[in-house]
Amino acid sequence: MARIFIGFMICFLLLNCNNKEEKIVEENKLYIISYEDRKLQKYYDSLEKRNPKSPPPPRGFYSENQLIIDKKRDYYYYQKEFMRYGCGTIPASDTVPHFIDLKPNSIMKVPQARIIDFLSKNIPTKEEHKKILIIASQNDTIKNNLLFDYLNKKNISHFIRRTTQEEDTVLKYKKNNQYYNSEEIKWDKNRITFPFIKPKLEKTKE
Image (cartoon, rainbow, N blue to C red):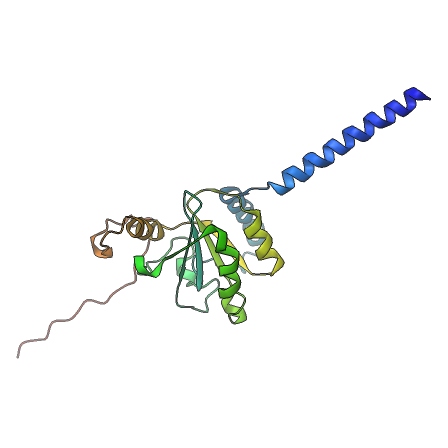
């Protein structure tokens, strides 16, 4: 009888330990952007195979609200004029982000301790189609249970991606308090597209 009781207690303790380990893993769950992007791409590919005539909607890069998480896990926020195209961008810019003429003074730093309070005052109060939050991270892995719990609890639509070349560049100039001129930047044209500008026509001499 004693052996049966001891065996039961050992099983109970092992089960309890396993449950605790599962809870710890769940509480420290990481969001890995590259992994989630691959999962989403596989899903899109499967949709396209089933119905080639109806490709999945463009994901886009920008919305009205952008939250940047830099390499040190500091928060920065900027707004962009809202456009009713998917997630705030045009379909042609689905794979490569387009130039948005972002300026250093358009980006504001948000203290980590105030991020939830800041989002609470700026996102849920907007019109429904303007509540989409873009989270752009310089790191591939994001760990912030407090942020994700808030977004899920408030049912705020959000899309997570890596920062664009333009965001990285402008943020760097902001941090270093340097003069910024987009025309002086050597942009990687494989990572950014620029709007087509019609050349000015010279007046014909009579």
